[in-house]
Length: 135
Image (cartoon, one colour):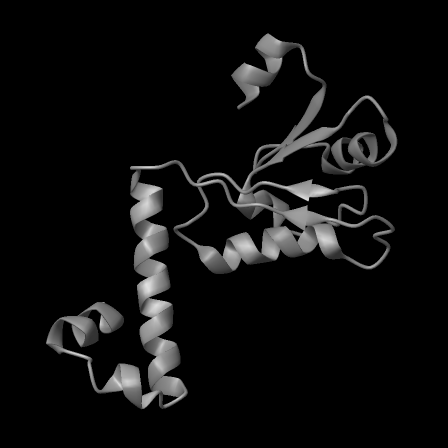
C-alpha cells in the first residue's frame, strides 16, 4: 500500500511495531488536513492508540486474527470521536481471504444454531458440519 500511495503522491502516515515517534504520527494524522490516510499494522495499532479523526477504517490482510481486527476497528470509535466513522472489510474474489470469510461464516452459523437451539438447523447437522465447527 505504501508503494502505491508514494507513486500516487498521496500524503499519509505509517505506524508499525518499529515506529519510534508514535505520538507524532498520530498527532499529524489528527491535525494535518493534508494527511487523510493512516496505515497502521494491526498489532501496533492495538496498543493504546485512539484515532478520533478517523472516519473510514479498511482492515487489510487481517482475517487470521478477527479479535485483533475488531479491536483495531474499535480504535476509530473511541471517546472523543466527533465524526461518524465506518469500517469496511474489502475481500478480493477468489482469494484465500474469501475462503476464510466463508469458513468463518459457516462456523458462526453452526455455532449460533447450537447456542440458540435452532432445531431446523441442528437436525440437519452431519459429521462433517461438527468437524468443521470444532476445527
